[in-house]
Image 1 (cartoon, rainbow, N blue to C red):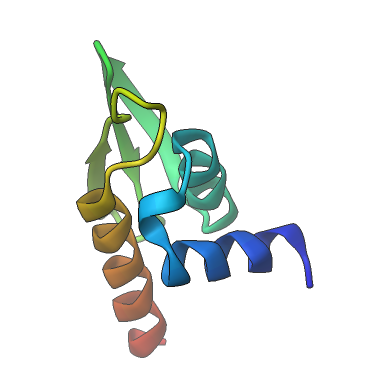
Image 2 (cartoon, rainbow, N blue to C red):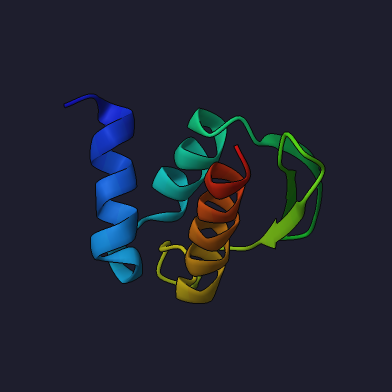
Amino acid sequence: MTKKDKLWKKAQQSPQNLTFDEFETLLKYAGWTFSRQKGSHRLWDSPDGQSLPIQPRKDGKAKLYQVQQFIKYQQEGEQEK
């Protein structure tokens, strides 16, 4: 199992435990590109133009609802293929 597969599995099984760095790595693996940053808010764009604003929690983990949005976007994108 590759690192990408392990991260994707972790995001799906326990998104509340995903660190912000792991979340950004997962976005990169999925082909998303970093667009810009203002303060702690970072904007990522999907290959098909969908935007996802993200920001870390105070404890350095990814916010649950943002990880869930990303998973939803990825699953919708796979269904369209």
